[in-house]
Image 1 (tube, rainbow, N blue to C red):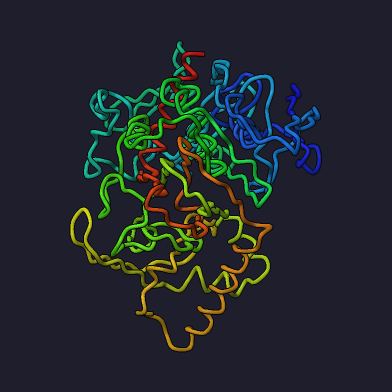
Image 2 (cartoon, rainbow, N blue to C red; image 1 turned 180 degrees about the horizontal axis):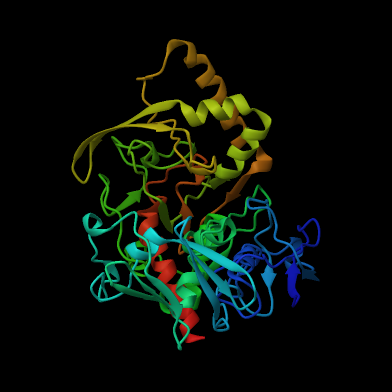
Length: 482
């Protein structure tokens, strides 16, 4: 196997190795299967990012090592890693995928495809018929299925299968309808667990880098992100992986969060407007609009679908106080799972009421029920929902669970507020921080409110669906350009 050279930061505990999986994976790179590339990607922050340096401004020392095995899925790593020679977000064109042989397994109702390297993949007949790509079954202009489920025989057999001269898999069905499949299309949709996991990583960028107080927040140029696709791709990859990215050099005037959102798609409108001004206001309709301390929180758990990404742009900073705080909620949830499994189970199973009432963009009376920690069907943490200010006095849970809930929540919050787990930074005019509102909890130290020099941040939200859409489009565009 061809070795990969990785440059490690001083915080990496040990050399890593990478092994090519035996199963077929959706291959994008000539050097490695996509699963390997994705694993390597999680070690790298691209060359356009500028990272904080150690004391004295010196560059971090670096070590080169040959890689032969992927790190754990959610290993805590330093985001100050750089990768050589080529960024894994830009995979090289893959070698042609070649089918050696096909075989219809009638009893199992599966098509077996043997590939040139000697391995094989299995495909259910029903899935193949459902995904016929001919113009009758697929609207080509929209890449959308035209075949109605009511017309699909879910117990279909096959009449014949063969490999065409141009190496496509051709199937004739019992009704004499014909389907042809490109080998690379089939290979990317192999049903093996390894291939499915690799495809999900490719689609959803699920790799995460956990961090604590020693995080060097990834930083990029606001102007480069606006005007350069590669810079924008690197920004969104780091935002997905690390959860927070700093942009420097934005004009210190309103409207910049809207400009940045246009790089992705559109803003998420909420009851506070498309954008909102974080200032000390009389008769504030939100605790953020005061000069007091803001405890660590996620925004808008009072909605059943809170905004996924938040932008905050500093227009003016307080003369005294106002430092920002952030903590990796996913990392803290995993620590809680290990240290206090009962508390973790309570916060992932008990639903908590949140409410928000007032008038801004329009009048509102919002009510939701959310877990403090949301997990998916495999137990992976996918979202944190916690804002102490909007946690409702209504607590809809059995009486014998109330004390368990409070004890569990206090344990989680105590973990988050430990100094070794929290990053503190000061925003200056022109700084714009972008972060994952489903993952990060953010807060603010109190500040001295000065009517002659008012602290002023402008904020905005986006949903992860829009951000992920732009990320996939940028990856494709940058790949094609290179």
